[in-house]
Image 1 (cartoon, rainbow, N blue to C red):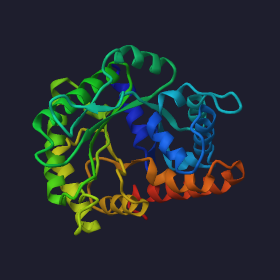
Image 2 (cartoon, one colour; image 1 turned 90 degrees about the horizontal axis):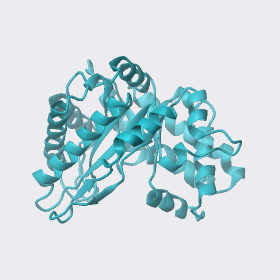
Image 3 (cartoon, rainbow, N blue to C red; image 1 turned 120 degrees about the vertical axis):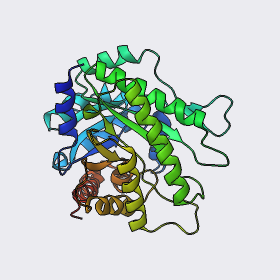
Image 4 (cartoon, helix red, strand yellow; image 1 turned 30 degrees about the vertical axis):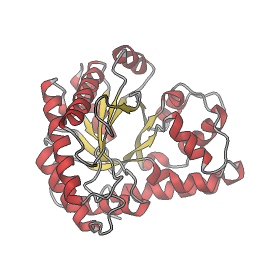
Length: 331
């Protein structure tokens, strides 16, 4: 592990006024995205869509890094350029999602545990040699009747820490993503309690495995009411409770925080981020690592038709620009 490399990469990822673009949809997820616009899910169409994203003019003014799915990381664009090399050429760090997805957690109905640690060290060595600068691993925490269990939280956070240590051993900055799902009718208070349990477990495990926090980026969900709650907390409450939770649970040495949008509307995701960044003296850079909140409107505009690329890219850049402004509290 070279701490100087990790610090340099993390600082580039957290550079103001930029954020990280999540374009690492898994095979089932990208299939759903393309189905929503009646476009066949095949390798060429996946390439076309992701090429539309990365070739958006001036994207690097808003985006510091892009998380790629494994297919995209090794895929060539229409002119023969590898996606990862193109991103690097325009000043956007290429990263890669390395987990193998959330699977049913044995003996724990309704809960998931993320897999992918087997052989991960060798994969990471290969990714670094090919030019990756950072990685991402997502854990999924579901709120429901008598869940999440301590077993689910601890298993997922230990896996995140093991992944993070392997990343740093290969000079890759780990993005650790403990997502508390927005699905359900739970209150913001319940989300707050679960998020705190998850973050405390995560940082205990990171500490136990000697993970270097100045070379680690946290990608958390916000403290927010469940989507089906009939009296959801207002935006100022979401921002204040999220910030209090982070201040209580996230060590100041952490390189930065890049929120996931996690089922929020585009406007909610940017507004919450903007309010948080209007607070004084934050101990870390707080930005975004959004997928749907940047891509959804552009995807709908494109519809699989190349004639719509320019308009779609304008929409995508507008979304990225608003998120960028929110990341410095100037929206």
